[in-house]
Length: 450
Image (cartoon, rainbow, N blue to C red; front, side, top):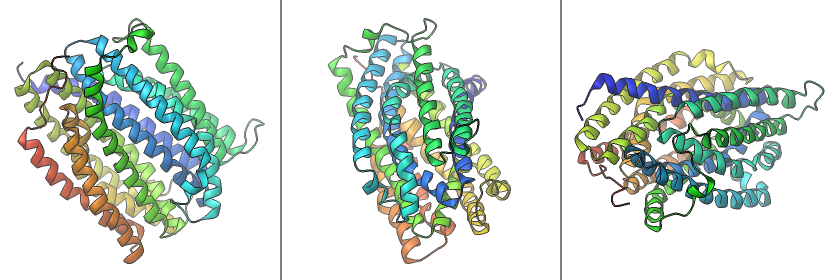
């Protein structure tokens, strides 16, 4: 196929824009939760931040499983094989349902012990426990909605997840407002109200995803039994590809929680500022990372078709778009750091830390986005998941996590400088990933002979 940059840019915008909007809405939803709870005080904000760490780990492990299987969905879409796409969805649902049930039981039995890893403040732990126990039902709900959402993206029906996320956004805000602050005759539940709002939104998410999945206009629509009866060779390949991505996301997400453990020991104010800045930055981050999601979809589709020359040109074009987006979005983050730091109800010191943390995030955005594009987009699209896992996990756990604790507990740096030291790891990771990309060893077709 002839490489047409204008046609590719139009397709990239068509796919990446709805994904970006969905990501922004999801990140804004998290920020709105934090802002609403933040009006109750720094302790409440820190409690939601600490409690959220468990769900972040689960969500990113879930994302690892799904992005590993999305390689197959995208490549099957390149050959228009909807039957096998349904079987991948059914396998994902079964696996995530088992994982969700195990985590639901574990988290409810050992809540206090788990939370003590992230904070030594008993007031924060008590409120975080309320948030975690109520929200633990989401482990089961996401097992249904997430495989369907990934399938919509892999089959380039990206407007459906965007629509669902917008409905959930406004639903969650409304329920949060009523239950956190005790409006319309309801009791003032605070942190617990935020958790109930989240669970209510997840239930609506399951209903809507199921509705769109089984409409005849949906590309992979089929009867329930067509999602099961898996071929042994297909499942074997999915597991082989998804295991490294799952391990990758687990160690990455667990590493992020270790940053929380390190920064929260500086002070509650320092951690509240980190949580506030992270909530704000996620809006920009999710928008930028839509290019990574689009890369997995587009590169996977072309690898499924077997067009290696077009795939190479496509990947280079996506890298240029990624770096440009990283520079622009990073600059916007820096320019808006001062007004954005005043959104939350923080002390003056908290607002100052929030501003400086946003500047650090913005300055390192391009490197962050390049690494994300390679690991979650290009390398995974070609099934090169083992290399992605090893390179990212080793950089985070051998470099970034030790630096987070050393800079916080040994060097006693303020939280924004501790974060800056921690994020220097991205440069080393970027060099490793760039070398792998140039080798072209990631260009594989994983659905051959299926």
